Length: 406
Ligand SMILES: Cc1cc2nc3c(=O)[nH]c(=O)nc-3n(C[C@H](O)[C@H](O)[C@H](O)COP(=O)(O)OP(=O)(O)OC[C@H]3O[C@@H](n4cnc5c(N)ncnc54)[C@H](O)[C@@H]3O)c2cc1C
Image (cartoon, rainbow, N blue to C red):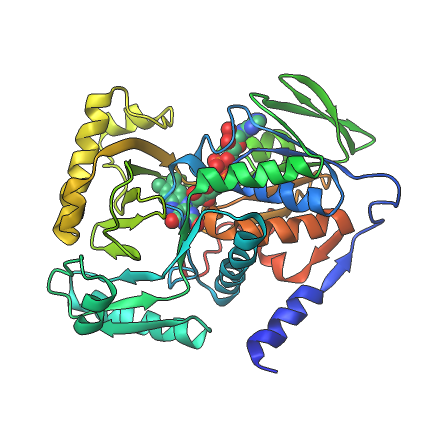
């Protein structure tokens, strides 16, 4: 048996009991707050495991980060240390099975990534070598292979790039809707707009949640509220410090196939979905000047008017065109500002609040990548009242100042 498989088996079986399991005959009642891709996956896996699930969202499914994400499914070099990488790797594999189980809009084909200066290219080669050691189908490819893999891309003189063959992308909005529909088919109830306002406790135990549509009885509450900064403190008495950053995502109308894979070029990311839509994301965040800070203070998801939105789309497509001239024909369909739910140490937060054990937090970046595994493991912990060993370092009570190579 190889080491990876052994670790996987150990991780899957190392669980610690934390009290009684959901008793036979009485369904565990779980309210999931947040109908982004993370909440939707947790709701689906809980419903599949036999819980009585209610999903609430203050706006609607995929209305926040999930509606404004680049949606690259990966376990590439940025996912460190090894434990976080391995969680991401397993989630990429879980996308494979979930994709088939629910016919989700996933497109496989891998990613190509390169930089515009030699020192960074050297570092990339070292990172790709580490990825390979960690079990990824990742390797550096030369100019001849690049031309074969992506005939429509101009690599700007780069003679090599990192090729991560396992990577894929998904239409995150459609995937969220499908997960919610599948949860609903298993008996879950989906309510929106419905805002979580408070929790009702009796002798320290959760008995209900208070919402804008009235109270809902609950044994457990899952906070999958994304980048909302105060949710942890308000509902779980646990602060989850976040450094949410904005990113612009431009989507085109469907067009003839132009790209086969995810392209991570200097300054820009792009891919083309199965439905022909191009998705373009900027690598840089917004400028830190005062004007931007003021405009972004309210965390808008849209620009104040279509003219400004178009200016940003044109600016991004101007960069994209340098690498993929075929994108010159793209017609912009939507421009979104997404806010990353990003715990300050860069790692996911998953697990019961130390102060309110009936409230389970699920707040993370790379939530598109992680949604399947997080859904599975969270459902396992909540249904079995167990603590899964491999999740210990991602708990909400950890020291967020301790940043482990990210
Ligand atoms: C620009 C950008 C690019 C990204 N690229 C990638 C990528 O390539 N790959 C990747 O894996 N990840 C990527 N991410 C991260 C990924 O999109 C997020 O981690 C993921 O979408 C988070 O999903 P979520 O369900 O946790 O949060 P969200 O989608 O934000 O959902 C949270 C939901 O909670 C609801 N909510 C909040 N408060 C309440 C309340 N009090 N009551 C009821 N409902 C409430 C909101 O309305 C919202 O719908 C990117 C993110 C951004 C912004």
